[in-house]
Image 1 (cartoon, rainbow, N blue to C red):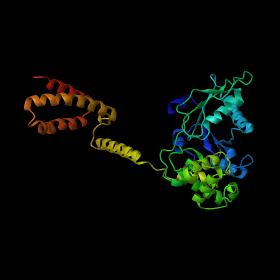
Image 2 (image 1 turned 90 degrees about the vertical axis):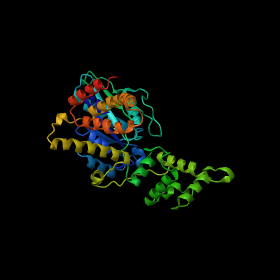
Image 3 (image 1 turned 45 degrees about the vertical axis):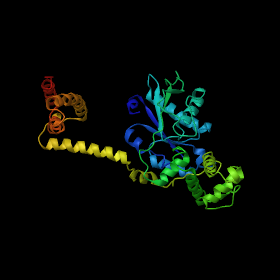
Image 4 (image 1 turned 90 degrees about the horizontal axis):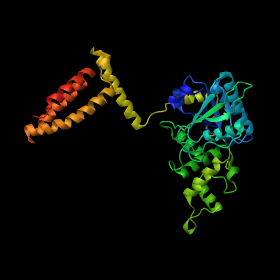
Length: 387
């Protein structure tokens, strides 16, 4: 993705309207810093009734001011038209001879491909160009540019092309509640977190917002997730052998019904003034594997800094590419050296001599400059010629 940024004029970052804070990916803040960007909050119809919560939308806009922010339900022609008009105006001011190229990015399953298809249909009246699905990971690679605006000789616009990209998940989610929110809206595959746990968290939000009426046809208001799932299973006929409720299947069905807007339409995050700044101050954290990689990088940097402190020129400090090349040659030479050493001294003292001599050679080479290492290796090749 980074390699394509030089040919991209505008970035459209999609975030889920139901989780405006949690669907923010800090990786985009780093990699897209300094780029012109439009933030689009998708699935607006699933986060509120009647076309959106105007009060909360004004707060969300204040988070990004003065950067532009739009809200979209890709089924709404007006919402799609607003985004299309923004891209046309942007292309008009760019005056590119080859057309304006826009890249669409975001977390998995936030509606990037659906938005692309809607813009294509509204702009050039053609069928969808990107596959979509209810589970994350449908888009696997960066696609070629898809035309969403035809060239217009009158205005001078040479066309607008939209580039779809795979969803990029945050490297690590240290907050359990954030993970539940992402799983509930579909940014995480349903096999990662137990659906019964998601239903329990969903039931908590429904009751907290006072929307018990959305499940009244299945059971009376309750805080017990087991009671709620059993009632839904019996009402919908999701039973196993002996009439036992199929808990997992029923829980998954409940989650899917909420994602479709059939069990309430509400925002899971707390939308308040300064909410985005507070989220940005949170420590994202790293996983165990990432911590190990960072530790190795820190060790390499400390080793290089020690070389500078001892007066060794920076150019002569071996970098990782030189070390990899050297160690590859050393491994190849080590095999030949072992064979010839066994012929000279036999198997009896082989290991002792090898440990004393060969590893000293390795450690010595790492301290040399790249030129000196190659000279030593060439000398070793001559020294190790068959007797």
